Image (tube, rainbow, N blue to C red; front, top):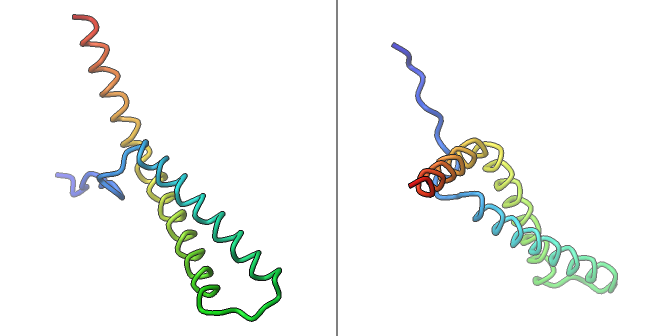
Length: 96
């Protein structure tokens, strides 16, 4: 008997569409945080709490993008299998 367990999904509830949506949202988030931080640097004024919060939010956005890329790498074959099953189901339905 084999002790290999089937591979588990990194994020069981995420499909390709929700990945694309989340990746787009977090990419825009990171871009906006970069714009805010760049504006703060160019202004030359002393930073208040809000500017440091922008840096924290940038780090959070980059961490989420990293996590999404990890999920994409791990779950790509699950997404392909779901699309193949869906296409097969639709093909059989049209054949009736």
